[in-house]
Image 1 (cartoon, helix red, strand yellow):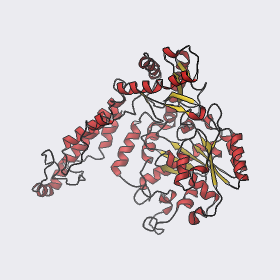
Image 2 (spheres, rainbow, N blue to C red):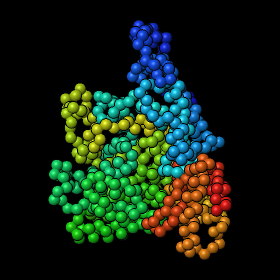
Image 3 (cartoon, rainbow, N blue to C red):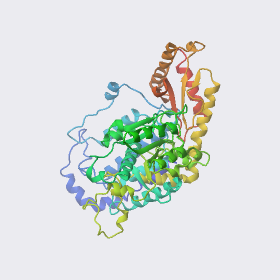
Length: 537
């Protein structure tokens, strides 16, 4: 399927070669008299000095060759269980494996292909079914096709005049997503990552509470406070610094044993800040925390936010995929009561990175907050409906088109296929959890996990049956780093590890199960491979 998609897509770049040669023959003849030799002695660059003549047969051949290389090596071999997830090398060794120097003269196409092969060889294959290291894995063929087509058209999604199809596509996706959320008149756009989406939400909340800050800044205003789980993503603190609010403006709320915000502690902290004369502005719930995968209960948080006129944002970058599944949508009950949501489709849905949607319940608010009506872009007297010029929704000017890859992927899979990918991840996570319970030496960090990141310790035989003193736990903390090193050096799989100091937990494995390519055999492989790699510890 992937090979056929690639061939079909490449027809966009291909035309009748014979007619091109006849049409351009005189120009090519003139150019060939002043050919420029490449570093390897080839004259391929003579007819295409700037690398931008796509009618040039040499350029067409190069593009076809490199496209085939991507399909064969990165996509087909890179997702084959019989091949390694990574050919790991230390930085100095990896540097010596490729010529990174930029030369004065052009490089021959054959050498560029060799360099591209080296890049693939030295890269982690995140589409491999046994890549469990980050909150993204797997790769969708339709999404890849959308990325290729997007890059081929190479446009900026700010005005309708330069990006007509993409603006229509992004608007259609946002309508679909806001309907899923239950936002009756919502809006949204794609952002460069989930962290930026969360920062956009912070900025909107600040504007909603105090529109004058747009002109006057923060001078003379009450200290604004932003609340989130002690286990939430660190983008909120980064955002507070970036927005000039300071990291002390972020209040970390206590969590229950599963990692969810304790509503009572949230309200207590809001009351304390009000008594100090500070302004509660923003609460960020999380749907699928980074480590334990906890889903904050939205209904009680919405009640508190309504009571204190506070913006409720949901960081659903990781766990938002549950909304696509009838089986798991209940994890995000009352999502319609939020004011905004961040949702990354390059995570649980396996769209190509990056594909980060930011969704808002109140239509027009993004424009009000961010609009500055640059006269060289947003002229009001254009020959079309200028409401389709959407660039003023964001603080960005240039913005990459991320809409097409998701739109084409959703077209290719339908609602049923998008839901099936989510259901498959949850099914594999349940199966893996049961395997851990049944196999001696494995211990779950918490009894049950809501999302598909499963956290566990591996206890080697040498440490089993002993008193679990602080010294014993210090030894357990050293197990995961050693096994992680061995799995990377052998390239068999990749799983992350970390401590969770907010709960006093030493290093444990955190496997992220999201790839649509995974099945129960991969879950079984992980257990057996960890046992093999840690057998002598």
